[in-house]
Each structure stands twice: as structure tokens, then as C-alpha cells.
Length: 593
Ligand code: ADP
Image (cartoon, rainbow, N blue to C red):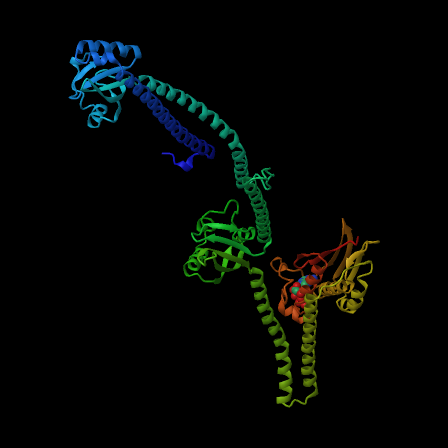
């Protein structure tokens, strides 16, 4: 069944108003009718008492008191004349005459309330109203004592109440019609005026719905400023505007947060306590090599498919603690991820989920490995000449060698190893300077950039009878370079071209413009580099033939220095080589704007 609160405000107003009207008007009608009937009966009583007085003074009655037939006939005549029923009853209650009925057929009337009142006290007037058993209709009776010819009789006058009853009945019908019209009209008025309450309420309701649906951000003004409703609307407006501001602020915060999460270099995944994914940023998807679309709300393990992460997540959620671990993934290359897990608590401190942060430490791992290799390599490279120096020096001292030729030979070896050490340390210093410093690029002319390197390496080339042929194009444009570094680079490359060349070999130096770059090539006709080594020659200490490189004074660092200088020029270097035919190194420089 419908509850009262389920009805609309307008229906409630109309129902309450109608109920109040029905109760009020029915009560008024009831009391008015009661009064009217009372008044009518009072009037009737007075009239009937007057009639009794007339009968009392009527001599015909006294004359015929002992003649029942005449008396009855006379009473019937008088009764019909005054349109009132007249009954004469003796002191035993026997009916002597009746204007409406045959007295001999009437039962004893002593017990009738109006008559018994008079019989008990002759000075009173008996009054009563009831349905007459003789006439079968509601009657009003008035009785009084009458002493005639020493006979005590009661005169009773009565009149039908049908008249007044039918008037009241008619009044009830009229009243009901009046009430219906009144209800209709008053409810029309209520209906009309309730609009002024309902309309702004409906407007508020509609606006609230629109805010919920996100269709509206501001609330239009509702003009009911002079009433309580107006105040309510204004307060609601304020609430709406405040709400808008808050929603705007929250949206802004959310956008900021997602911008931060999207641009983060760390992967972030948040789940609820049931391990449903709440959020996953693009980096996390990339690191774990999965598709991120519509991932929110999905199950962690079914999407991420990594039992190690899932186990950690379970542990963190169960034990409410922070966990850190490093895991390797194949995505498809081997990557190392540092994963940290932390629970999320609500304001009451209860756990509502967990967040995991994934940091790609692959590069760091590789750097770490490189550093270890480097330390091992440097130690090894330094140790070899030092052992040799110490060995020869100790031999001279311990064996007290005084023979000049032997000493000269040993010191010669010591000097050679010391030179190698010096070279190595200088190269290492150069490399570390390059790694530490950022060098400035300036627009420079490179037409004669090879002059200084050639000057330095001239005698070295002549020793092997190597011919250096210059093919630099004329009028090369200015390029962005750090001149000393490019000279350093050329020294290293031409030095290698000499070192790993054959006797009477050739070296070609080329420079030419192609699109917005100037390409430089250093080609030799030397030993060449086997294909499998070509990728690794730029690594520190990497040498194709260690013994030969050492023999000809190589440190294995030259090409690392070259690679760094090229990188500092935002360029790349490539190598093409065929064993026993020769090698060509090529890099480019950017034309100055
Ligand atoms: P190194 O001091 O040993 O020359 P580099 O770093 O300059 O060290 O070169 C690394 C290795 O690359 C050399 O040991 C050599 O084996 C090879 N290499 C470099 N340049 C050439 C070249 N022009 N011809 C043949 N091999 C070369």
C-alpha cells in the first residue's frame, strides 16, 4: 500500500485541505441542523401548549365528557380543523378520544413518556418525540393535565415531525452539493497556489538531477526571494554553486593527478582490497607490455598475468606492510624492475587497497655491470705493465746486474711499459673528462680541420710509408663543432688507420655535404675488422687482437673517446670493414644555421 510520504506534496496539500474542510463544514452543518430542529420543536411545543389551553377551555368537551362517542366525534372535528392530533386519556391510561384513530382499538397509554410524566405530577407538561406505533411515523407529543367535571383526564396534542425531517433531509442533500462545489473550488485554489511552492521545488529537483547527470555546472537563479521557499532556493543555489566549485576543483585535481601519472617515468598500479584494478598509468602498461584500454575494474591477475607480482600484492594486503623487491621481466628484452608495494588506507585507517610502483632499473643495472667491468679492466690494464716494470726493476736489483747491455735492455722495456702506462692513463683521463663535461658547439669552417692531426701523425705514417690522400670537397658550409674535440677525434681515427694499416698502405680522408649534414669519412687499406667485432670496438678496452694492439701501443680506449665526441655533436658514427681489405669510419656534422 502507498505510504503517506509516497504522495506528491501537491496531493498531500489537497488531501489535508479537503479533510479539514469536510470535518469543519460537517461539524458546522451538524450543529446548525441540531439547533434548527431544537428551535423548531420549541416553537411546536409552544403552539401545542396553546392548543391544549384552548381545548381546556372548550365547553363542548366538558359537556360531552361522559358521552364517549360524541366526545370522540368532536375531537376528530377539532383535530382536523387545527391539523393536530388530539388524544384524551383518562387517569388509568385508557384512551377516551383520538382525532386520528379509533379509541377502542388503541392500547393503554399510561406508559407513554409524555403521559406518565403528567400522571406522576399533574403540574408538569409532558413532552416526547418518537415513532408513533399507531400512525407509523415520527411524532412530537405534548401532554397536560385537565380536570373537568371532577374527572381527571390528560390532553395530548401531537404533530407529525415528517415535515421538519424532510426539510432536514433536503438540507443534507443541499449541503452535500454545497460541500462538493466548495471542495472543488477550494482545491482548485489550492492546486493553483501550490504551483508557487511546487514550481521552484520542481526546478530545484530538475537542476539537482542535471548536476548528478553532469549536464549542468551552474545553477540559474530562481526568483522566490521573499519567502521561506525563496530562502531555501537561494541556499540551494549557494549549495549548488559551492558544489560546482568543488566538482571543478576535484576535476582539476583529478586531471592534474592523471597528467602527473601519465607523464611519470615510474609505472603506478592501484588496486582495491579485492585486487580489482583502480588505476594503471601508461608507463606501467608499457613496462609490463600489456594493453591498458578499459583496464579499470578488471581483475589484477587476469590482466597482469604475473604470479610474482600477484603474490606480493596478496602479502601486502594480508599483512599491511611495505614491500620492496627487484624482478626481471622479458618484455620482450630483459628488463629489471624495482617494485615497491604499499597498502592504501581510508580515513579510519582500514585498508581499502594497495598501490605498486614499478621503476625501470635496467639502465642502472647495465651501468652497474659496466662499472664493474670497467674497474676490472682498468685494474687489469694497469697491472700488466706495472708487473712488468716491477719484474725488470727487481731483477736488476736482486741480481745486482751491472752489465750495461742487460741493464740497457731491461730499462728499455721498463721505459716502454711506463710509456704504455702513461698513454693508458692519459686516454682514461681524456675519457673521464669527456664523460664529465658538456662541450660547447660553435659554427666552424672545417676545410683544413685535418691539418693539425696530420702534422702530429705525419712521421708515424711515414714510418710505414702510408700515403694519406685528402678528398675534402671545396667550400664546405660552416658546421656546428667543438674544434679541439673534432681534431682529437680525427687524431684517434687516423692514428688507428695508420696502426692497423699495412706497409705502403693508403688512407683516404673525405668530407662532403649531403642535405643538411656534412659527412666525414676516414678509410684505410689495412687489416679490417671481423664482422662479429664491429659492434663492440667502441667499448672501452675492447680490442680485436689484444696482443697485436698492445704491440703497436693500443690502449683500447681510442674508439670510446671517438664515440663520446660524436655523441657530444648529436651525431652517430658507423663502421664498414672487410678483413684484409680495409676499414671506413663515417660520421656526420650538422650544418650551422
Ligand atoms: P686501440 O688503442 O687498441 O687502438 P681503439 O679503441 O682505438 O683501441 O680500437 C679498438 C680496436 O678496434 C682496436 O684494438 C682494433 O682491433 C680495432 N680497430 C680500430 N680501428 C681500426 C682500423 N682502422 N682497422 C682495423 N682495426 C681497427
